[in-house]
Length: 347
Ligand code: UD1
Image (cartoon, rainbow, N blue to C red; front, side):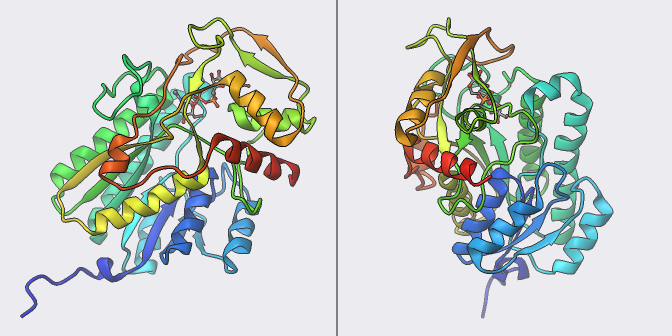
């Protein structure tokens, strides 16, 4: 006699990927497909472009399913799930992520980031989908008291409305896990994802002037921007500039695949959090110099004032993601900066 019947979802290879046309989402869609999953993209392309979908299709030799709908639109999401039938799990990337904009328009961040997760959680429950990976950020640590920062560090120190939406979303997932005993969730705290797919077919597509360091560096090297502005060189660090943990986006994407596999080998209840970083910190100037060295280009820069709200130094304690999840990065900062430059040259 079969004691426990597997739910139809557990037999499916379909994974809902909200924000699947975005930077991290598109790389994860590729790695999911390579690992034998069937990614289903949910993205209305408000912050991404058709080009990302074309790139995914070119890498995989076939276009994954896409539903061009707003994750906050519960009715459209419900119709989508009905149409897709049995689903193994969901990865929720869709969110706004510009720290500065979150300060000037916090309501947008609370509505989009927390609202879309609430819609998704309700629908996963309704449709009996049990496995969820949530896209969180090291921003929840704020300025950590000690480094490298591990997952037990206080997680309510976010300095921006954007950061606070990640804290609130993590809490929402935990509360939902308590309320729905069949739900399994993995919360992934990303450090600083950079680089591009080695094929140069997908990568980061910032709209307008990039907020983040590496796209700005790449555009400066390409002559699109005149000069990089280094945001302060009077911090108490090795060369006075801020320290971050820069992780290759393909390593990050592969961590999502691992998280799904890991969850499927386990029973509910389960709600776990992991840092996703390299474990190494690099300064802004180290990133600039490494970019110049590995790519043989110049990156003109000037030192400007500090950027409001910047954390001085943050890098990951990676022990837990290695010991529990069995995942660690395989690519270096130089690899990531080489791939970022190759991608930039094709734009
Ligand atoms: C922050 C969050 C991260 C979040 C991301 C979303 C923290 C620690 N990190 O990234 O979790 O996902 O926002 O966008 O809260 N810099 C320059 N000149 C530039 C651009 C950046 O000097 O033109 C410097 C910044 O001041 C910073 C470093 O480069 O010191 C990295 O900046 P950025 O790439 O924007 O990432 P975070 O601010 O770390």
